Length: 135
Image 1 (tube, one colour):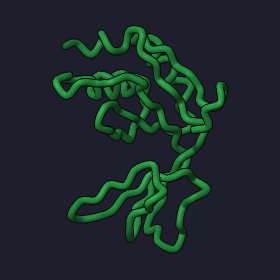
Image 2 (cartoon, helix red, strand yellow):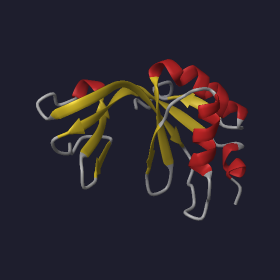
Image 3 (cartoon, helix red, strand yellow):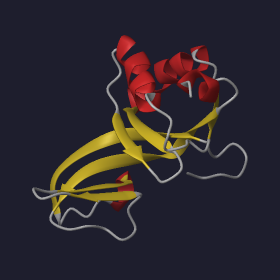
């Protein structure tokens, strides 16, 4: 399986919401994502929902780019291709995977360059909130 097959004709949605990546004392049941490992808990939450009382450190100003496609577990190198392409444009990413698809968070100021780069890979890029989708 070639990742390029998924880019061509695939859709990426840019969130209307702006997110914060938070090192927190505990998880947040309303967060977009909660990641726990042996050392820390990280929550990805809409900026206005940051719980300052439990936040240890906060990185604000991220937009979520969601690959609106089902990515099979056998697919090798998809995120590597995305991260590599965005790295060519000096864009840092915070990557997350769900069961069926991937998401990358990029800084608000890098969204336009990220959109252009993903379009050059063959993706159609859409902004959420333009057709009733608010995230």
